[in-house]
Length: 116
Image (cartoon, rainbow, N blue to C red; front, side):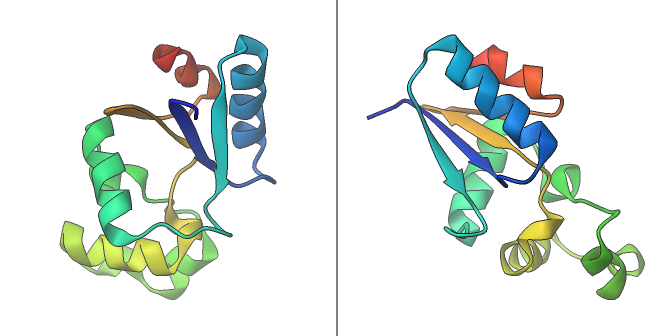
């Protein structure tokens, strides 16, 4: 079992770069496409806490769904924002990489190296 898990979208350039950095490091890891295996609210909340990030810190504001839901005009609590993000994974910045009790938002992809 690997100590590192990367939550990613396979078509995302930054995600592919982070996955390649992990492969190149020789460190075993598990890759999870969070579009196929959706985050639970508790899981996402825990990962963000481990990374020292709030839901607003990882909110993708340029996505169509952000505009459709008019999130810029709403003052949602972190709890409510997590609900929306779990329902609409396009709103989550990626990749999120977890190692034991630490996590990082690997943007840029080289940030993943802090966990190696």
